[in-house]
Image (tube, protein in one colour):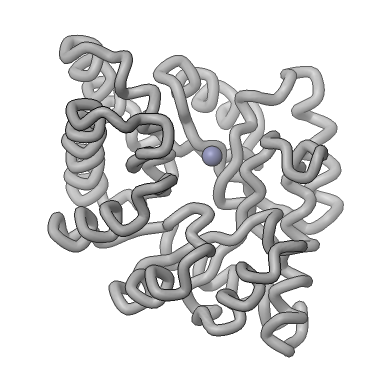
Amino acid sequence: MLYDCHSHIDLINENEVEQILENSKKEGVKEIISCATSFYSNEKILALSKKYPQIKTALGLYPLNIIELNEEELKRAFDFFRKNIKKAIAIGEVGLDFKYSTKKEEQEKQTRIFSKFIELSKEFNKPLIIHSRYAQRQVVEILKEKKAEKVLLHSFTESKKLMKQASDLGYYISCGIKTLTDENIQKNLKEFPLKQLLFETDSPIIFNNEKAHPKKIKLIAEKVAELKGISFKEVEEQQEKNYSKLF
Ligand SMILES: [Zn+2]
């Protein structure tokens, strides 16, 4: 069985969801983790996962969405997370995004809230699904400093050096659609331990003019098997072990 560890099913038109789940199942995708972005998406994902057992909830706030929330709203959000965390498989997507947030005070706010999510993760023993655009080094530093225990770094496949740091710290990374075409990512994945690798599509985000679909997990797993020079079955089985260990 395969697993999509990072998607945004709440952003897909609701009348398409059933078909997407059906098609994914045909390609061997058993579960799809849907990560929250805005505060509103948390409620939507909880409702979707209640309706469709194939969808698993990750509760959280996208780092860029944090900027616009005031302290009262943030407090309310964390009260909501505590109340509903038992229904979630993970906390995500949380982290830092310094590409579209360059002001010092915004970055500090993101960092402060990310630290709170790490504490929440430790308190409830839930893994973190982490976004780290233009802030990969900073994310690893905070995770290390706060002694985060269960970590999945999303789309963390560009820097061989940082991937090595992440694997030394016992973190997992997930590789996505770009694995199919990006030679740098392919080169980096060859050396990354399969024992800490998971797969994601970030559906329905658009890659190469095409909307990502969770069924593509199969293609990603096949590509990884090819890169590692091992069978698809070996990749699939190790991924099953990784998934059940982390989640
Ligand atoms: Zn995402």
